[in-house]
Image 1: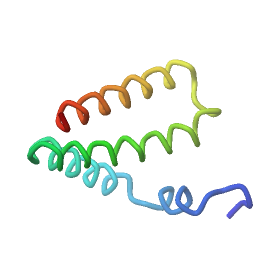
Image 2: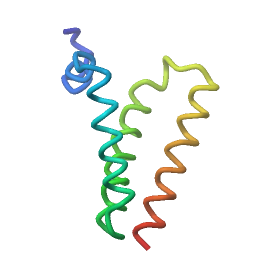
Image 3: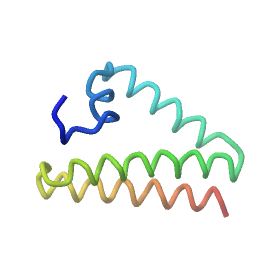
Length: 85
């Protein structure tokens, strides 16, 4: 592991991509079908994780990719806030 590499990212890099996708899909579905505040908090937790990954990988992404990721995080936060309120 490089000195600048974060342990969370190293562990995520070793994870099976299919498992990560299915776990994220399950979390999103549970959050969308969960009642009000519970679902909203789950979506906000997912958005926080995505913002963390977005900030860590910001410098290596193309500008189009950055824009798409920002739009997706914004939509996720908007849906989470709608569920909360």
